[in-house]
Amino acid sequence: MPPPFAVRRFSALPSLSYEAGDLDTGVPVERDFGAHVDQTNYSVVVADRVVVKWLTPPAALPHPAPDLLAHLAGTGFRDTAPPYAALTRVDGAGETLLALVTGYLPEARDGWEWCADEAAAGRTAFAEALGRLAADLHLALSTFPPPSIVATPPTVTPISGLAVSRLAGSRLAVSRLAERAEQALAEALALTDGEDGAWLAGRADALRAELAPLTRPISTPLIRIHGDLHVGQILRWRDGYAVIDFDGNPTVMEAAPYQPAARDLAQLATSLEHVAQVVIKRRGTPPSQALDWAGEARELLLAAYRSRLAERGRPDLLDESLLRPFEIEQECRELVYAARHLPRWRYAPMGVLRARYPEKTP
Image (tube, rainbow, N blue to C red; front, top):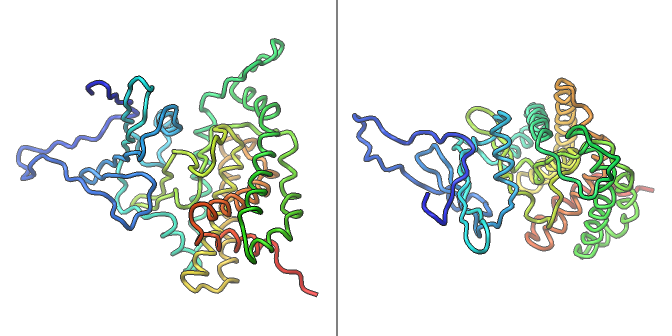
């Protein structure tokens, strides 16, 4: 690759060459996904074998995706689009990430589409596969090199990544987790207007009480997490399910890369409740039916996740007491996102919260 460009390789690219007898011209066919696909960046499919995602705009390094993709490739994690390479540019301003190259997954469907189909039909068996996938992802990410701890006292010598993670959790994360959650609630209260805003304000104390566990010391390890794990990041394709998009959460500034695994799991679980709100609004599914579906799917997801961690000898990766506060924080963040970027989305987090805090009857 000529300067100022560089390529960071994660695994070998598939061959796009042709046999001598083939009638193809030898030029791979390129196409995009079409206007119907909602994407922050711009992706090009090459010969139905490779996807090149051009970051728009390019992102200054460090960026979470290259390191995470390299690590997943190295650990043998297979439930993602095969990571091949990252294209960067190096100049006086530093190194910039231009594009990510991954494998193409045939017959892939976006999670908001296939999961809505499952909800409308009342099918929940898929949730077990998602729970195992999330657990396998966290097991792989738990071996990511631990963060360096600044000013560690000389008497403390962490003996493993787990020890470092626990130390980081107990000393550095508690105040940040609580502060971040309180800020999300405050912003949701400030930005949500009208009847929804009045309803939310009336339950502010109850919501704040739900966040209380985040003020206590964190005993579970901090690991590299996906950071934006919801059903929309999980494709259903010809051979199963695949988690994608390791770019981090674009709506959360300066989110810590190392967090409890419960953060990802809580977001994935609440996204099932969002799907229930989608089918209520867009497909006419009766609310009671959709909410029952979400409850059953959620329990299957969590049970499969716990079971997989236990099978692998790592039940310590999940602190169940963090799920509820992270879920409440996530709904607040969904409201903030709706207010700032997508007003029509507000119905989903409000629907989830109203279902969790039903109106009191005399």
